[in-house]
Amino acid sequence: MEKQKQKSAAVVGGGLVGAMNTCYLSSRGFKVDLYEARPDIRTMEIVRGRSINLALSYRGRQALKKVGLEDQVVQDGIPMYARMIHDLNGTLRPIPYGKSDQYIMSVDRRKLNETLLTAAEERPDVTLHFQHKLVSCDLEKGKLTFKMNGGEDVHVEVTTDLIMGNDGAYSAIRKHMVKRPRFNYSQEYIPHGYMELTVPPHNGEFAMAINYLHIWPRNEYMMIALPNQDKSFTLTLFMPFDMFEQLKTGDDVVKFFMEKFPDSVPLIGEESLKETYFRLPPLPLVSVKCFPYHVSDKAVIMGDAAHAMVPFYGQGMNCGFEDCLVFDEIMEKLDSDLSKVLPEYSMYRSPDAHAINDLAMYNYIEMRKSVNSRWFLMRKKVDAFLHAIMPRVFIPLYTMVSFTRIRYHVVINKAKKQDVLVDNSIQALMALAAVGGGYFTAVAISRHLDSIPGWLRDSVWGFLRGDFAV
Ligand SMILES: Cc1cc2nc3c(=O)[nH]c(=O)nc-3n(C[C@H](O)[C@H](O)[C@H](O)COP(=O)(O)OP(=O)(O)OC[C@H]3O[C@@H](n4cnc5c(N)ncnc54)[C@H](O)[C@@H]3O)c2cc1C
Ligand SMILES: COc1ccc2c(c1)CN(c1nc(C(=O)N(C)c3cc(Cl)c(F)cc3C(=O)O)c(Cl)s1)C2
Image (tube, rainbow, N blue to C red; front, side):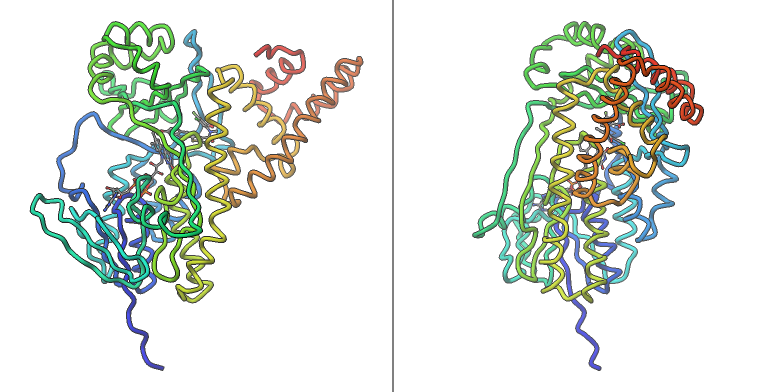
């Protein structure tokens, strides 16, 4: 049988998903050219104090595993076994993600991107082109035009069998898709922006508990912190833009933090807080949904280009990495026939991408509306209790999202059914307790309570007593 001519692929965007897809497409026998608008980040000097990290969970790890990179990425990361909730009064409350083998990883974004780019570059028939910015394309013909970003006014025209659009939330490839008939598109900027701050090491050591995702939930705004390999923490402050704008002087900022996040001020340092706060403006958060993700057998978009989402589930990168894995699984199933693979990918992946996008937005609204420390604590404890007493019937939503590959849209359907069960269970328990069945309820629960940790047992009693006046 004649040997099939080697297919070519042009990956547009050398971020996390583009570099990952380059590894996958090379493994499928493609000749791959990756085009990235920015210079090669591996040659750029490290910009101090801008260590940005991300939470890597199961879906992303499975995608890394299939291209042989999971172990390398995980060894560079820091495990987070629990959240650490910072109350306004400075009380710290840990809430485990699950059993000791259920943890998420804090990974350095730049190091992860570098690892993926180097892995891609080492693969056969892969060429990386930096400072190539896509400026126009003819998707039907597989034609791309890049402007060299080095300053000279030089354009490069490329023709390829497969255009892989991984150029992020403001994708140029998607912009060309949107012009086509029957292409559905929506985007939403939320009123909140985000700003990164740093907690440096104190006396050469981590200044907070290491293996935790630290959270300061304050309803209308919140802050989270993830640990870095260099023993610092990167804090991300989420707040409405008009609140950011109200803080006009260094003293305003320190006063605000002393009122709302008092324990963080000595950790960040007052001078550093003032300096960092005014160094860069808060950045916007956008949610993008579209369908389909492909054009005939010629072009497909993945990652933020296809489904940018607000970060309130820590799933954007994990979802983008899972896109690569799902696409490869469909390539395997349909023998790399792009005329079948691309439409199948759009049909199969869109309900899941839309589901996690909606879930992240829902969690943003929930956390902004009613999540302070007590609420956050109560909800996670009820989840843990119900999972403990009926592990196969009740799986917490965040567990299905971050610790399984249950399809995102199936997660939402299961969670809706479970919420009904949770509401009914709580009402039944309250009714039993209310009609004097407290004794029998107590006996029934105490039999189960032995199987759950002390802190949870106390809180269940507290919950049943109605302690949670949230
Ligand atoms: C505050 C915040 C916190 C987050 N936390 C998490 C988290 O904890 N866990 C998680 O999983 N996700 C998280 N995310 C989401 C995650 O950052 C994104 O989902 C992920 O970076 C998407 O990767 P990507 O490769 O699709 O896009 P990008 O990382 O944006 O990469 C796109 C690349 O394309 C290039 N490009 C753009 N336009 C062109 C062009 N015209 N020509 C050539 N190249 C181009 C860009 O230079 C860039 O390198 C967070 C996001 C934010 C904003
Ligand atoms: C680098 O910037 C960022 C920004 C936001 C996030 C991350 C990294 C990582 N994030 C994760 N979220 C979950 C989760 O499922 N939920 C419901 C949570 C949602 C919020 Cl907003 C939160 F603060 C805690 C939890 C929690 O449960 O710990 C994980 Cl599990 S990891 C959010």
